[in-house]
Length: 380
Image (cartoon, rainbow, N blue to C red; front, side, top):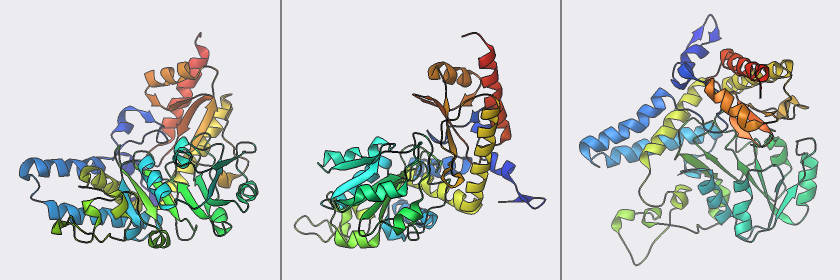
């Protein structure tokens, strides 16, 4: 990555994302665009299988492990603690399997359903802690956990209003409970250190802030969790030497991949995720966070100046994320109008959600504000 006059060259990064040529794309919280190089990584696999079938099988397996190492670096995990999935739901169910019998779960009323429903489906009691002013207080979370809960399950960033949880503080006070994190709204835009934050298990999709496209994702299971649990689902590829083709006995591998990567790999999604992770690592987590938050501040200030009510909680800047919930009386009309003006956001019951990632710029924000001004000036 290059710099211009001592400053990071965000323009060259933006050029990697063709969507930015045609849209003010403020919807990474819903589905992020892919870069040219990420699309090329997936396309290369299909070109190779088009031209040579599976003659590059060993090459693909090695490429998969390079991708695993990149994703592991992104969250400060060991490669054998990382498994590739196709979405957050797959990862969360893998985690629920690993924590079977761990006890009640404490979570938050703001949560996306995948953080709660898989536990409920296994007849685990889930306690939803009320938010105060759109924020979950750590003391309330820990008090609700009490002596009953064996698991704390929480999103790093809440999809509903953009509130960002203090993972390091929660991890430091989790006690003997397992700490599970849904990172779908943070992986790729905020630094994550599973060791420092004392996270036992984490899952994320690749199609949001990771910018890797649909059908990609990953899960992390700490080595301690791997050692003390057994997988519920396995396959012929989960054993130490699958190509012995034994059907009368087996010895399971101990790595996280043995639990999730059942059967032949989904190579294209894995290669896309690996390339997306490489791009993120090249730019740097701190630079990405700073860029996304600076743009988000600009966004919220511009909306407030325009008379729009921002619903995301910003009482504590440390809890700010890169997504903003904005009130609108007729959300569908607003989002349709923005779409006609090539501004992409997410529709929400309260209004719309706009997200700022590192490939965005101030012109994207200006396009949003201009389109909203035109909407307000036009008859309903």
